[in-house]
Length: 91
Image (cartoon, rainbow, N blue to C red; front, side, top):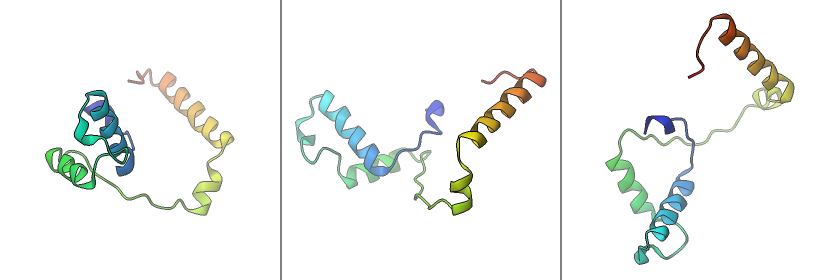
């Protein structure tokens, strides 16, 4: 479960994923709407309290406009440089 801690899925995506899982396991009672119900999702969250749900928030204009190829490349170039200089393992 730890490896997926940064996986960001909406509640709708999780419900669709649960439906696909049920369909592959031939659970006929799930054969409607293409996703699990909201009550099923709520129950799943109660059973798995380590999961948290966040509401999406709008990105500010300055943050959105600065997120482009040049800045992202610069970020990763700096990361590689630091990992090399400090002899850090990326894992």
